[in-house]
Length: 383
Length: 222
Image (cartoon, rainbow over all chains, first blue to last red; front, side):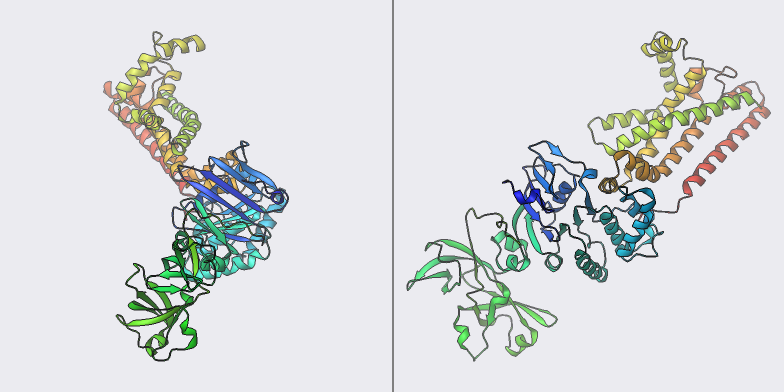
């Protein structure tokens, strides 16, 4: 892990944790003050373990955790601050409120750094900030799920932490409450200028709330970037799969009339970027967002539809309200191509299972993912 | 009514409770929070007095308290007097006999505290000791009350162990339970009846008071 001189001075969080087992970890990420980084990945991908390691509740075999210019954990240097010394605000998945204490007392527990008389007033102020005025004397069992989450958030922030860690904070509440709490978190972010790390397996939540996403699998950080880039340019088929992206195929680089093309079954596809660096004959995985698949209208071919026209057989049509998700099968490829059109357009075009239709695969949308030892992590980009 | 025996019984019960409580807290918490390989062995040892006939336990205690046994000899050297047939001896025997009653409820109570409550306390800045006093103790309070009630009531009723170790010396080792037996042996059923009723009443009151205390909490687990 190269030393980052900037991290020694600013308030950012730098994490680099590695160990072969018992919980495998190979994660490197950073989070700037005021930034919200979402750690996403399936259950068991090590998200919570990483959060616990940042908080000092878990000690990996090797690595570094730096925050606000302080080294919290340095395995090589034998340094590991206790959780009490790290100034971390952690919201647990089940909130971990103290059941025998009122909401107010729960927040006051985290105010030990203030002189006694100030604690009560400060705890009231925090409860007011999370809109829990009037519920200060209630015990956790007398609060709703959303109210408990707010108490947990107030308690986490009351210590004026250097970093805020949120472990699936919206998983235990109903959808209406979840939306409201997510909105409040987005508003709260404007007031606190510390790094915020959110652990979630909900990709919609992650892309709605986070500035950047870090994709984890089996403890490894595979790629991190802003959601738009990540969803359009996954670094590998694995990342695409973890991000629930369909339309990942395999092709071969081909040379045709002095131009590089992507040979995919019987078709030679134009690709806007990425083919130049690849040698003809090389196998390459590629991905196309479903927004970049354009259905040809029957009997009315237009100029734009000359772009990478391919034809496939409709094998699945799923109507989800106004949107219909269509899957096309091809004789040469085991996987289907999925795209969405409005349901009325599907009706107008008389789309039906078993029909053969023609679509264009937009050259600018095709994203190549060369095989081999690809770089696991997107290089750190200045934000 | 043998007031001396009642006084011995009460002193024994209170002494056992007071001495066993800190130890029960320590061991109960240790058993609840650690997962060492020796844990089942320790748990089995703690539970042993529950399954052993009291006379057997009393026999072994009496043997080990004797001046020939290493423990008895050591005690003799340190304290200057033996343990068998003394109040100190029956108190020590009572501590051993009540181990499961004191440790197990407290262990269960500690086990019921989710691990992340401790972690939340640490992240809130509480030291391990502050976490114990402010978070864990209030949460295991019902377990402590249970342990005290069981220990107190069980000590009042203990017979076999006390008889083996202490015999029946007036004012020293003759507890109410043993005095009742003595009365019956002497065909004084009326005296035995009064003392039995007294023991019943005290046991009932004790348990009523402690359960009343345990039930007086506003919160429940969320």
